[in-house]
Length: 196
Image 1: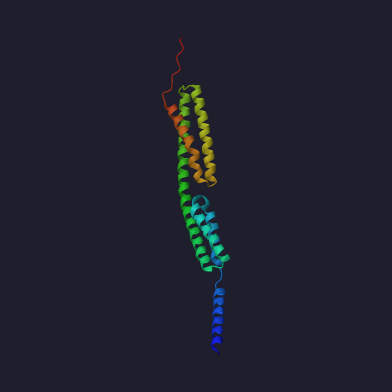
Image 2: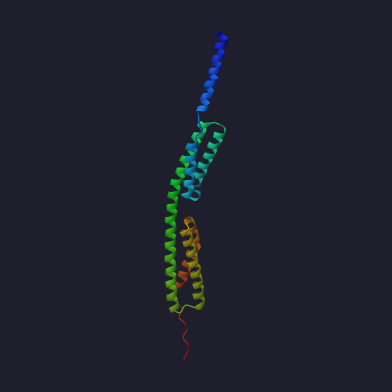
């Protein structure tokens, strides 16, 4: 072989080697599918509400992985798909933890509201027997009805799994019931005696 032919053969060999190395890389479709499944599992676990930032980061990493596949940068696609899967799994765990905490807080709020409502209803019965003016009793009944309605609304939210909505639903009604309770707690006014 002549020196020029050797150089040409070596150049052709390098081109073939480069093309073979490029064709050997495959897009990380399995890892991308795993990341997509992990994101869907995180959504099912409530990550949209309870781990929004981590879920958004997982979704963003998955978009970057797909973009890298389109650009044939399979190594970057693999890194982003693995990052996406890991973030989605973290979002699932975070969502489960936050959801459990929100549920416990909602249960405490419901229990406190139910106890307050029962206390005010008991005070109303005592006040009715104790000669409290009718206008005061009517106002207390309206407040109790509003408190009962708010408690039912909060229970419906709890049963739907919207645990974070429960405490705000009960804050104002509980405060109102506490005021009614204090008003009914005072000494009852005696009806004036009629002269005989």
